[in-house]
Length: 313
Image (cartoon, rainbow, N blue to C red; front, side, top):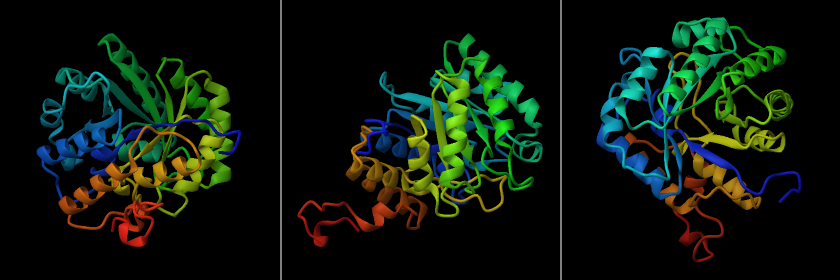
């Protein structure tokens, strides 16, 4: 392992929420719960299980309460619910099964209005309120800055502005602050610069990163972010994902691909790669398509019998 890299990284499994939210084929609550159980079986201990949003806007998340009702009771697993406003936070808290609220602030006005009907500055204040709401309910709260690396409507996003709103969000005391490349436009140099600046501005609050592989730079961006001090990475089983309100915002970095890369570099994740590949194959069957993850297509290395014949297809 390169000396400046950490010995371990925490992964947040976002497949049940971000992985599915843009898919036209609706997965049943029962199958979503199987996906969550498979993620837990593979070692995931933080899982974004659903979002509490308007079901007319995101039909895939219309079953949020039903999914939460079926979550396995695990003291060692943190279930995260994504919320955009106080009403969504109330719904998540009312389930009695969500451990952490995930708020979303936006780095541009036009994306904020399209995604959640809020200006950028309004989204920052609402996110701060959600973190306070979580704390008052005995939960934890975290925040993500969407389109932190580029906006589908406004183009480039100022680093200075991202650092400014990151600092404002962290005044509310989130457990971590995430930078999201919502439309997959970031490059490793850009990532390294912004993560380093945000980390310095909000320390000791951890930096989490959320990358889409829309333009093929997802894994390189994960590596750059970790080198710049990010300690938590979002990933989705199979590499599914996308934003209904951002044109051409395709898949998240695949959990299997991230785990393979980090484990080969000597960085622990606590996840079982073979179990993740099995989860990928199961999910692909449910979605009736091959999923984007490259590792699941290529198979384990070294293969169990040290030959291509032993690799999973």
